[in-house]
Image (tube, rainbow, N blue to C red; front, side, top):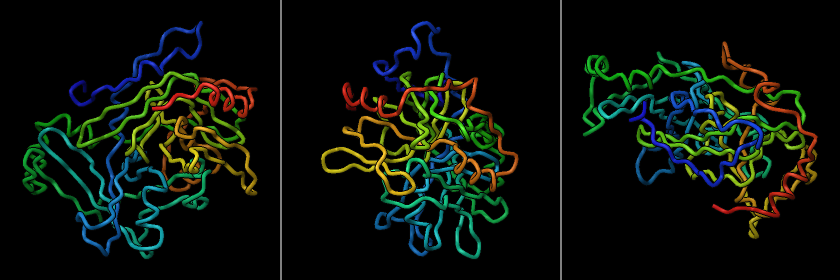
Length: 328
């Protein structure tokens, strides 16, 4: 898979998590094959340059289910029929896409009920599921080089000689790190954030501290920059387990961001919000949301293998990072 994956590594952001521990483990690149490119738009509009098309990423949790960020599909799908196009495979030779139709009478997009766009705490509840029904979906097959349409029979004949496309088509079933019921913890392994662009996967790897913050019920990683266009994609451990999905963060004019609890009380204000990477973790709420839809979901407790309990207050984490923030 070396030809399929290119590495974008931020060395200056990757000090060892613990000075006494050995260097970081190798990154399981094949794990990122579960990540896919998606696009969504209102079904009553034509896909063209005049239509607002929301381009994002998604993770294939199951052959029939994809996980993405709620904000990736909310505008197109929350109140009207929409179309979600998923690139199932795109090798140097072959491309396979599928279009999933969503409507109130035949729902295929399920947005977490606690999500509301425009709130600064959305990274804790920014999750949505896309159901892929192989019998109802609309497939399209093309030759990657020139976009020449292929019939399914033609595609399947060529697919036998394209192991890369086969791997992409068959990849599914990422294992989720379950943080339900845990207090603030620090992840042991560094995180890896891949991005799929036209069938090529690059990724950012960070070795700095990553906390699941009990008060916020989501993950926070200071000093780690994530590229625009990663929304909805996976946040993996180096071994390939899924720690969360890439979310978003709203800023005030001064670059700060405030976070509220369920009662609307401000519990945290980041001075330089652009210096923080927030991503949706699998806590009790999001985990139950996914479990209720996805059959045979693969999960593992974040403790003790992947994280250690931390008595450090999240305010201390933020204060230290605010004092020595790094901008990317």
